[in-house]
Length: 273
Length: 136
Image 1 (cartoon, chains in turn blue, yellow):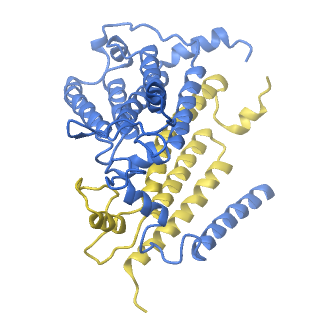
Image 2 (image 1 turned 45 degrees about the vertical axis):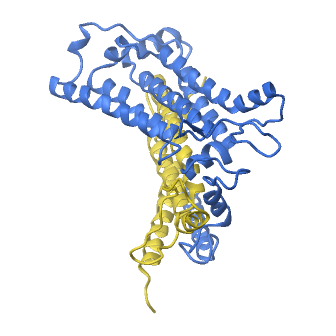
Image 3 (image 1 turned 30 degrees about the horizontal axis):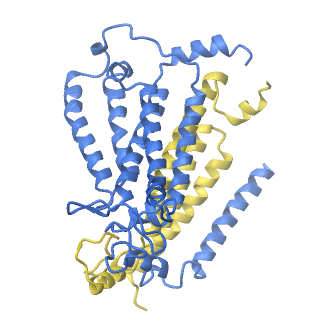
């Protein structure tokens, strides 16, 4: 009981200190402030600025410029956390063998009305996901959001059709692992592509470089045929979409393994528990 | 003294956020069920994300001129247009951090849910006090 009282006191104190910091101007004396902070102002000014070739990313979407160019290494490590979380789930489910369907796979799932509506909406969701991801350098969106949107499709099919329907149509754990590895490999390659071009041209270049810099005069083209690509940003968004969508699909597939299959495995293998 | 409605709503938002933080911390530390701990953890991370987005917001110039999203809509922007854009757009940096935090948070939550599910299948309980008593 005493421990609980101390705990509640500590939490109350934490909230009080948090409120005090805000009240004393820890976030600035005027909330919300009149203008953005100087760092943000610089980001806003140089994200798409053809007259400032030294720093510009050639992307009118400032958030994506920050995510994949100004602070690209942050995002690379966040992708690594994502990778580890998915791999952790796969490791937890090792050895569990899902059973084969006992009846015709079209007999599983909800009513034909729901299935028909799902068949129509699934295509639309995928189209929107692709649009969000591939226009990430122009409009709000990007690989993370597009991938999360695309992952809704297997989730819907899992609930409305069945796990067996999804597996019969090629969405299996190992296929998804391969697609996710392809996405992660693509992200790694895109991070090094300008360095590789620099080696081949015999000039200096950086890892995670996008546009040419004064001492590293190579980079991916910002425009191709008048279409704005923003160099590496488009490729990062594309590969991140594959990695995120496939990664979430893996976990959904693992979570949907029937209870009796898991229990069977745990009883056979987990005798020592 | 005249009450500025934006400052007023900002204060309400900050206050509710502090309450939210307290409730979610209580849930993480004191609810014995792992599922309730995970729910509290998502509330905590969502509050932190809202807080980050709020820090990047800027004051309305006039009641009819809200701040703009950090997306440039004019590709032939001159220096003046860019300067105007930088003075009306909100801070893009917290948005960039929150965007990745949401997806990573979802992946970690899924991992924790799966971990809890496996623990429940093995031990038949999600109560941390029961799980702590188990040996081996």
